[in-house]
Length: 220
View 1 (cartoon, rainbow, N blue to C red):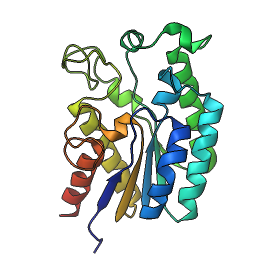
View 2 (view 1 turned 180 degrees about the vertical axis):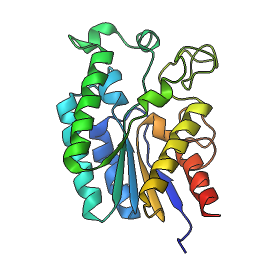
View 3 (view 1 turned 30 degrees about the horizontal axis):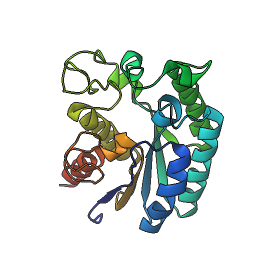
């Protein structure tokens, strides 16, 4: 019988892959996860204060994969969800992105991440088609936007979006039969759980919290 699942949320708002490597990896390794989940890249590509190239992002992710595999942890990567560029550019100057728009930066990152996952034989959960199943700008969107919240966001998931991530992860974990005794969730404000009760933890409405419940339900 598998032991009770313990899930820890290491997400830091605003973190790009360099900061995840620098600030989240060591405490995550001390937790000795049996499964490590990484959702990163939104800040690398969209946050004008944290931009780095797709090449550097993937170099950081390689270091993370090396470290977690070194302690025997299984790994799963996720692509960042899509976003609404016009709402993003209300908060960030277009000039900050130079010759590469946020959309182009995200496209390059996703391509590089896909190649990296294949190179390392790591499972990659592509969140994009699931989020695009609904209009990103509509009231029933999986993103927080002016039609379903007080915030002109267009980048972070809403409650339904976090549930979507957790549900697709739970399906992926079940399909591979991974050991869920200790799960480390690394990432940025999406992992942290922006706007959700329990933000920064594996409680409340964050995707780590919902994932934990899904795994416990499946074990009943």
